[in-house]
Length: 229
Image (cartoon, rainbow, N blue to C red; front, side, top):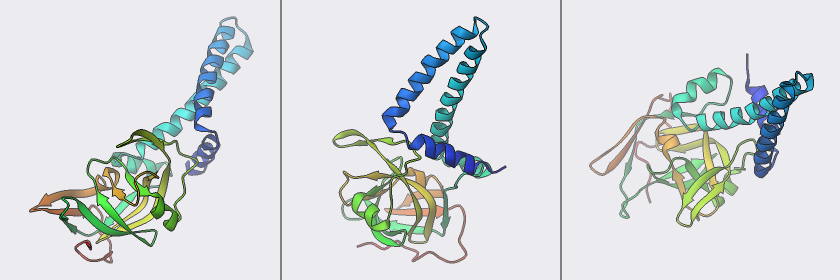
C-alpha cells in the first residue's frame, strides 16, 4: 500500500495550521482527552468517543514530527521509500575539493540548474540555502513541514525547510535533499551532514576533501575535482 497520498494529505492539513496553533491543538487535545477519560470512567459512551478522538489528533501530530525527524537520518532512507515517502539520494563518482586559502572547503554547485557557491561544513546538521540562491532556484518554504531551530552567531532562530530537487557539484548529484532556508546567512550556502552522511565516505587527505557517493551514476556529473575560484 502506498501511504504517500495519505501522508501528504495529513501533512498538508497540519502544515496549514500556524505553528503556534499546533501547540494549542496539542494542549487542547490533551485536556479534552483528560475530560473524555473522566467521562469514560462513568461508563458514558461520549467519554470514550472524545478520548479516542483526542488520542488520534495527538498521534497525527506526533507521526508528522517523527517522520520529519526521520528524514534527517540516512539510516531511515529505506524505511521512508518502503512506505512511499520521497527518498533523498546522493549518487555519482569521487569528487575532490581542495582547501581554500581561508582554511575552508568551498565548491561551485548548481541548485536546480542555478549556479551557487557552497561552504562544506561538517559541523552543520542540515544543508542551508541563502535567500538569494533560494529565490534564483525557485525554492519555497514547505508548509507541510514543521520549522527547525538553527543556531547562528546571533542566537537560535526558527527557520523553514525546503526540498532541493537537484543539487550538483563535481561528480556528485543529490536528489530530493532537505535543506533549511536561512535568510540571515547572507549569500553563503552550506552543505551539511544530511548530505555528507549519505555518502559512502568522506575524508581529508593532505588537505584535500574527498567525497565518495554510495551509488555510482552511469554518466559523470561534472569534473573530477570540484571547481574552485
